[in-house]
Every structure is written in structure tokens, then in C-alpha cells.
Image (cartoon, rainbow, N blue to C red; front, side, top):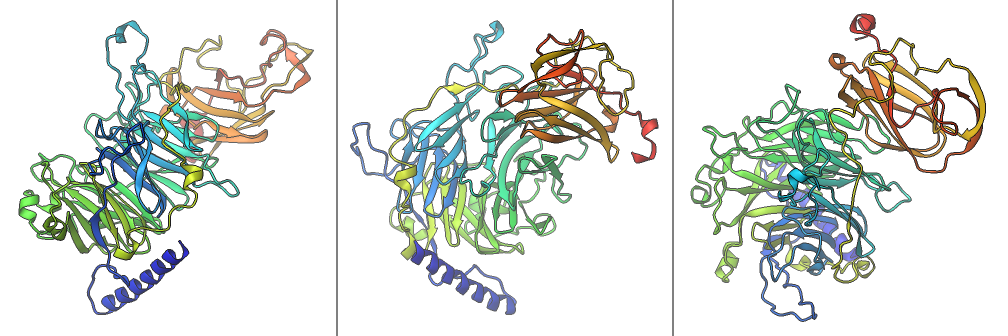
Length: 626
């Protein structure tokens, strides 16, 4: 492995030197290496039968491949819908030498993969029968099963499977994006992973999202607007996710952001929005790929029937800002692909983008183009573009040389992944794999930890675990007996003024609760936790949910939550939801008579139910700080 990486390093240096010469000469060309790389079909053999016999050595398509992801050049995964009966839906692994079936479970119609550690990962997978709600009105309905469950792989097995009943406000929606933050040393496994997809069920507004915090999987929807999340990539300590803008989306934002930046756990606010002012609203969502310090995105027209469809657009985020490389101001141009008029009657500049992959170690990326109207006999078409928006080279697969050897067309380009410089993999719509590499680097040193992480075929998926509900748009009715509009208690929570008695009871989870406004529209809630707990703050105006924080796992001690508020929907109540993760200590305190049952907590603490928020200032009272 060391010799291979050294060779690649030398290749990269050679390429950079030649690129410098070309720039000085005023030209631009493909990155050059000590040995030229080429795309070639490298299809794995079919899996063995249950008896361990390879029934046929003739390769066949793997079915629709939803995702291809690598944690190292010689450690990769793909998830497929399968091609029954020979290829079951499941997961395949790459060890530097070949691809082989890893799991015959947890496959997906269009699944996703998120690496959490060297041998640990998550998949967005298809559900299984039995997920329908038990209510009478849904008894004859068929629950949706495509891409709406999760599988957690670790130690060479599926350690957990997550699903939720269908036809409910808190049902899992189809998920199209997955990603994990890198583990904080000395940990080797991530405890901060995200999964996102379709919009929430009406009347809720927001995108369905799940968050893995290392101990539990919690719903944390993006409630700022209701556009489906379609892709997600890690770059520079952040996860970036993109959305699809579609007619009928439930959204209150006049100019919704196309990109959300997710902060690591413990950093508030969790989501930050990023807008791309040059992005055409009729474009499809941005497919993302990151390498080094740059994030690439590419999109084609969303609707093939548009009278004037927008052109293919390629953007790049570098040093904190987005720039357009290819698009209306710098069109892709015509005749960049051989047989363009035949393959793309609408012109390659109006093609659909199916994937993008940044080429590590270079200022370039590969883009997969698909005709607006697809046919079964199409080739795979790729463009290699530079960070200046120039088309460096194109590839039509299988190549003319391979076609001369009798290799027929294997479908349009679907997913691309580039784990290293001059090293990329492409899956087609028919489930065939092409590999870009120099001839001497077609295989790498075999993954020495393969037997530790991936030992044998995984055939068992445990029963699905149910999860906490996604908060509804309108929380349940207030049964606390408190009035809708409480009196003004200043900046703290209401305290009981009734006589007190001493009692030896369990200490409250939360004490010393105080709230204040920061910068006019951000509510800061401070409190002390007796033990480690999961905490979430919801704000509502009468019966409507207007703001919420993600669920946070906080250690014992002085803590705070920040909640952004909307001036036009100022809350009248807080719902501080808590769940202790350790036994509460016992103590002797003064408890209000008529409060909760003796042995519970007094009214000077915040319970897990609805809690009255002291009256917040009106717009007139806030004055100039707004």
C-alpha cells in the first residue's frame, strides 16, 4: 500500500508540473500523470449460491446502484436494488482487489451509505412488510417501503434496524441523503450522523431528518421550509445538504436557500442556510461532491418539457463562497461530446446531471450526463471539468476499444465516486461498474483489515426499532391548567408563592432556569442539569409550533439552549422536553403545597411537559433592538 500511495504522489506531482506548463502556455488540458489513466469495465462475478457454489462466472448487472462510497481507496461499499434471482438487494464491498457481496439484506431501491468508522457504516434501505399503522382507515393500504428505513452495520453484522409505522404524522419519509461527521480523536467511530429526505406530512412544514447522537436516533426535522433534501456531503467540519425546489412545497420562505449547512453536535444553531443567487429555480437539485477544501455541485434542468430549459450548471464552494463555473454566464457549449446530436437531441448543455465526483488532488471533477429522454441502449457519458469551467476531456463508455472487443453498452451513467487521485468508479443504470485507473494500478494492496470488519456474508437483519415521534406542527392541548396568556413574570419562569414544606424527595432534573433575549430575537435559556440528559426546547404561539431546537445530549451542570424566534410569530409558551440518562439523586427540598405529588418536583422546576413561558416583550416594547 505504501508503494502504491508513493507512486500516486509522484504521479500527482508530475501532473501538477505539466499543468503549470500548460497554464503558462495559455492552454488547459486534462491532469497528466506518470501513466495515463483510462476507463475500463470491471464487473464483479455474481455471488455464490447458498451452498457456496459459483453457479456462473459470467458477470451480470447488479441492478440499480443507489450509492457508491469509499473510506479509503481499497475500502469501498455500494448499495443495490439487486437483479433477482441472481443478485439479491443488498450491499457489496471493495477490498482493493475485487468487489464481492457483503450483505444480502438492507438493499434499497435507491439507497444511500454513510461511513461512521473504519468498519462501521449506515445504509438507507427499503422497508419490510408490517410497517402500516394499525388504524382502521389504513388497514387496506399498502405502506410505502422505498428508502424509508435505516440499517446500522458494525462488527461484521447489522446491529440495528430502524423503521416507523406508515400513514402517521411521524412516519419515516423516503430518505435521499446520509452523512456522518468524522469522529473526534481518540474515538474511531462517529457519534454524529444525519439522514434526510422528503418533506414532512401535511400540515407540518419542513424536511424529514433523523440524527444519530451515538446512543439514539432522534427526529430533528429542518422546519424553516418544506423542500425535500436530496444530497449531503461532508467538507471542512460541516455537512452540506441540498434541496429540490418543487411546485406545491409547503414553504413560507420567499427565496428558500438551496443549501443547508449542518453544524457538529453541540454547536448552535444546528442549521445555517446558504443561498446561490445565480442558481435558476427551474434547475434540479445540486448533486454534491467534496475534496480538499472545495465543494462541487452540478445540476441539470428539472423538467424536460420546459420550453427553454436552463443549461447544465456547475458550481464550486471554495474559501467560504460559491461561484458559477458552468451555467448561463458560461455555457457548456455544443459539440463537446462525440455523437452529441444522436445522444443528446436537446443538446448536451440541457442534459440531466446524475452525479458528480471531485477528483482528489486536482482542481477538477467528473460529471455524469444523461439525456432528458433515456433509452436502454445508451452509453455512459462523462465530462471532466476544471475549476475554471473548462471541459478537459469527455468519456463515452464503453470506449471504442472495448466496443471493438465485443463489449456492448451497459446503460447511462448513474453514480461516480473518486476515492483517490486518478482513481474513480462509475456505476451505470444497469448496474455495471467502470473503473478509471492506470493499467498498473487496476488493483491495490488488499485491505488488511477486511477480515476484521467484513468477515463473511451478512444475511440477518434484526427487527426494526421504533423511534420517538417527529414533533407535530401543533402540539397537544395544554392540560397544565395554566392560562393561555400568563402574567408578566419578568425574565424567569413562574414560581409558586404558596406555602412550602420540607420533604425528602428525588431532586429535580432541572434547576435555576432563566431566560433572556439575545440580539432581540434569540431566546437564551439557562439551567442546571442534575444528571446527563437529553433536552429539547419547543416554542409555540397558542396552539402552533413556531420554533424548536434539536434534541441535545447534555452533561450534568450549568447548560444553555439558544432558540431563534420569528418576530411575526412570537411564542407564548415553551415546551422543554427532557429525558434523564442517569438516576436522579435524592435530596431534601422545600416543596410547594399543591404542586406535583410528593416525591416529585416542585413548581420552581421545569418538567417534561408543557411549561408556561413568561410573557415576552411585544414589538413596541422591544423597540430599537429589533
